[in-house]
Length: 213
Ligand code: SAH
Image (cartoon, rainbow, N blue to C red; front, side, top):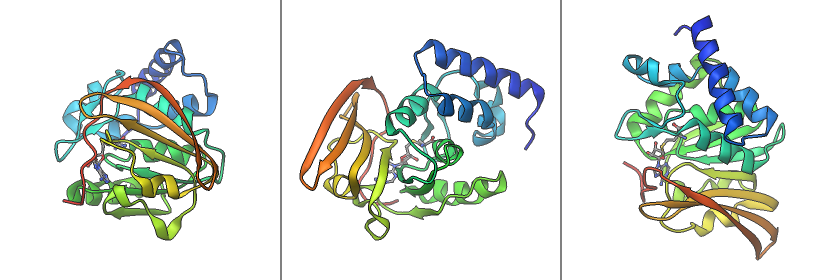
């Protein structure tokens, strides 16, 4: 569990790459510059940690591409102390970014193996989410709602209604929607039944699956 000067140097380069790709939010770039992404991956793959690519983790899942993490985080417009919900904890890397942004983070993972691994790992490196649960993200976390923002980090075939209804007024849902390819979509809740929708181009995620496993 080491973070060396070499890793820090590689991270600086990754941040430069993200800037070139038009990521502008300074707090998001700072978070990515700080978080030791190599620790979120299995040890054999450490050389891949600071290239701008998704990478396999356990249970056939992936740690999202840094650009995608940055892009989604930017769309959420996280402010310190915001209550945020993440669907798809996975490796916990996106969770760590949200925590660095000062959010109170609630996160759901449907793969038991990953849930267990990541729940142990995050506090070990100093990242404390408010709540990590093993469950089905299609249902959201009604007992903790409403949220200032919600991020879905798996490809959703459709937009789950519970997620829209768990947003506070003014809240933002960032969700990749589609089957093989997903359109990054932002919903802003303008009123109890009024949502503004914005679309931001194509991305590829592992699928958001129903129920837990
Ligand atoms: N944010 C993660 C991305 C992991 S990939 C990271 O940075 O590492 C997407 C994750 O979503 C996988 O771990 C997958 O198991 C999880 N997932 C898929 N469908 C889900 C659902 N219905 N509820 C909760 N998690 C889900």
